[in-house]
Image (cartoon, rainbow, N blue to C red):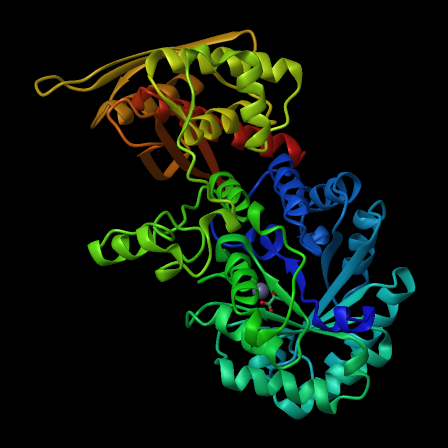
Length: 512
Ligand code: KIV
Ligand code: ZN
């Protein structure tokens, strides 16, 4: 195959987890979490990381800037409206990346132009051209998006796409912003642009599908079948409202059905599961068990007929192997006698690269855990290491906690929290032991953030399994997520609450 043909068959995977997914309700991340996810996206080998919307806040700007400086491999993109100050801000944040892209967008549907932009279509077009030309004067890689394209009149869409190409856009994105498209229709819209807009064959036409009708992946695949060559997608399908097309679904559909699609991505599919877990953990949004590719049941077989078939030949009921997306069936990992070296090697295999200092601390925690649990599984290690490797300034530290509860007593808790040199100690009661512990912490630190969500789940099976708690709190209109693990579920919950408070404090420092 010639280089040109290879290129023709290559689908650019543009990941928008750090922009579209991150702006969805309750999914916000702090800067170091974004950087951590961006490094993992680089390992996954996505072509483009959309790192954020730099002009929208100082935290967004700094996150894009750090990703541009630190993350090697993918093109780093920043979002901008068709406004000079947005484009300048994106260009400044992206400056230090080896390869970077300005992604500028405006709305093109009547309803958006009339009610949101309050501009005539001529004015919208003129501003778009000006923005693309300006962005092109700053970088050779410019993407232009026609927001709400699927509800845009096709003649105007053609005109807009042609104008943006003439102004220098190298990628044109046709978003299904409100998840309104259906595969056949959306494919026809893409094919029409590819075929009929002058210059469209020399640039990349891109898809960006939302999932309001549950069709985001289907629409994206229909679009590439019709000539689009970039898919914008997110890990676990997270994003505004019902989410975006899921990266793992699009990539595996292209891989498993290469027989008819004849298209390729450069994704390291064995990194998919790890990336999915990382995003679920850091955003505090669980993956539904029956979610394609990465859900807990995606490779679980229960019924007798299926199990019988699988035992005879895996292909009877599996269209891809769990290993191909990084789901390993290795269960038993380590015990107390595995030693520091064995522990270090397994941590590295699980994708955690640690400094000697963090390794020492993590190993000590592992020994404590191995004393409590006979068998330490990969999932236990991942939970423990995720806690350990988090880069977060700890304003509050839990020093001591005592909780009492039972069928005939009012649940109560006493906590001692350290804030630098300060020792903060309080007692409180509540509806249950966890509520009592959270109330005591609130009293100690003299704060009352709103508890939005609290979940506790077992990391592995068995009664000695570690409990993994996730807490979401709301303060000043923002959500902060905290995690905690322990074989004691009250301790896991309390750690998660303190962790969420530390995220809240770190955010207020970052925003200053
Ligand atoms: O859904 C959408 O239209 C977007 C654009 C900003 C690309 O996210
Ligand atoms: Zn979107």
